[in-house]
Each structure stands twice: as structure tokens, then as C-alpha cells.
Image (cartoon, rainbow, N blue to C red):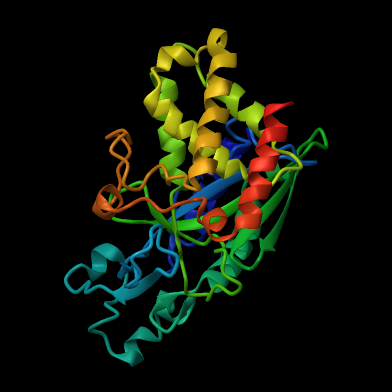
Amino acid sequence: MILSMLRELIKCSQFVIENTFYPVPEYPIVVGSTFQGWGPPEEEPIFRLLVPFRAPRGHIFRLDLGTTQELPVKNSCIHVEWECTCGREQEMGMLCFLHTSEDELRNQSPSLLDTLCTGPYLDVRKTACWFKALCITSWKYLTESSVCSLNVMLLLKRSCRLRLTDAFKRTFLIEIMFGVQQDNTDIFLSSQETEAAYTPSTTWPQTCAVAEAKFFKHISARAEEDNFYLGYMQVCAYILVGYNFSPYELKTVLMHLLTATPIESWSRRYFVQRMDDIFRYLRCSLEEKRLDHFLIGNEAVPAEIILPQEFRVSRPPNLFQHLAQDPDKHEQALYELEMLEDR
């Protein structure tokens, strides 16, 4: 219900901005654990989505991945440029921004460069504020708005949180981040927050969320039991409560094991053995102070997951680098793992 309603909301928003030069939102992609039936136990489950943006007519998005060698890139930007539309003006219903005088352009809606950009770069905060207003306006066109209520809030000024209350007074929280696809891959530049103390408003870090969600769909399609992996992820999510291991670290361990162990060995009758494998892999990684990123430099990633070339050939970043640099944290992690293994 939630996903179909959000698809309708995006469809309405496309209609609302049809004659403007704002980014064009496309149908949302599920990236969060709650939609998949697992995730950290929270008072209110949060459904997480990524809404891809296309450049509006007459504009081009050029992705600037910066100069850093670290992957995923954290300081990437989205460079907005005009595209010549001469000869197609009637077809596209616009004047060419590049080759039309300023006087003539005054009768046309403003360019994206004049609305949501800081300099030549798409601004995350301006985009988030605009998308919030767009959701509020578009919601009025949905038939569900007569029986449901929608409250839209900004989240860290980089994404939006929707609180949807249905006709039965049930409340759903939906977090929406925005993204621009990198070429034709499953990697996006996104509005997500980085770990840095300050993230510039023109920074759109790479996210692997879509590629990881696609990986689990690929694995599930090959299994005898639909979504068989959810049981393992649910157990991991619940036993992690109160410990310093992140759900993403356990998710990474599971992804590595799913490609190393035959799919048929993950059925319910092997549940205990596979849980032992998960903790054994985690222990080995802790002792070595190294947990490789799953999608980077990993030949075991299925070919169906479309990655940039640099992801295929680069050395994988170490998710346990902080433990390698801090002996006290490493010792604490080993202690917590022993406690987990005794549960």
C-alpha cells in the first residue's frame, strides 16, 4: 500500500512540474530494511526509499566524482549544464537557454541553475526544501488525501521524512533520499548524510543502497524459499541491540557468505549452521581487524549488479578500519562478540 501510494504521489508530482525546469522525480526504489521485513527494532518502523532524479529538459547532469581515490566517493557533486535545444524548441515546448537572449527568456520559467543550484552545482538543501513543497502540493491531487493525512518534514535538511496516517489511524514513517544515477549502473549520487562533521550542501556522496537491494533480490530469486535470508537478518538485527556492531556490518558479513555458500544450504533446516557461519566470519574479521566492503573489489558480486569499472578493480575499503586504528575499540568489539556468542 505504501509503495503504491508513493508511486502515485511521484506520478502527480511529475504532472505538477511538467512545465517547469525542476528535476524530474522518478518512481521510488526500495532501499530500507523495513520494506524487506527486517531491520533494527524501533518504536516506529521506518520505510526508506530513494527517489531518482532526471535532469529537466534543456539541462544535463554531469557527475563530478572529485579527485579522491576512496570508494564510495564522499565528496562528489552534480554539475548542472544547459543543453542546446535549437531546432527542437517547438517539440520540447521551450526556448534554448544557451542561444536565446535574456529578454526572450524572461517569458520562460527559470532554469534549474537559477532555482536549486549553488553556482553550477545542484544544492541538496535547496532540493530537499523544494521536494517537500512538491510533495505537499502533489498530495492534494491524490484520492487518498480525502481519507489519509500526510505530514512532510525535512530531515537534516538533506532528505524528507513523510508521516502517513491512513483511514484506520495507523501511522507510517517514510524516509526519502534523492539520487542521480551514475551512468547506467546501480550506483547513485545521493542526498544521504556523510560521517563528516559538516557536509557541504553541494555534496552528493555515492550510495550503494540500490545495488545492495538489487543483490538481495537476485539472491532471493534463485532460492527455493522466497526471502529466506530475512530470518537471518531479523535475528542479527535483534541480537545487535545494545551492542556497538552496526546492522550494516552484519549485513556485509551476510552478503559475503551468501556468495560463498550454496543457496540451497540457506534453507530453514540449516538455520543454526548458517548462524554459526555468520558469527565465525565476524570473529575472523574482528581478529584480522578487516571487513571488506562487499561491492568494491569483489569478484564474487553477481554480474547482474551493474557497477562502475572502478568498483570492480579497486581495493575494497575496510569497514573495520576504525578498530585497526584504536586498540581499545578493538578489544571492546572482541568482548562484545564473546557476549553475543554466549546468548
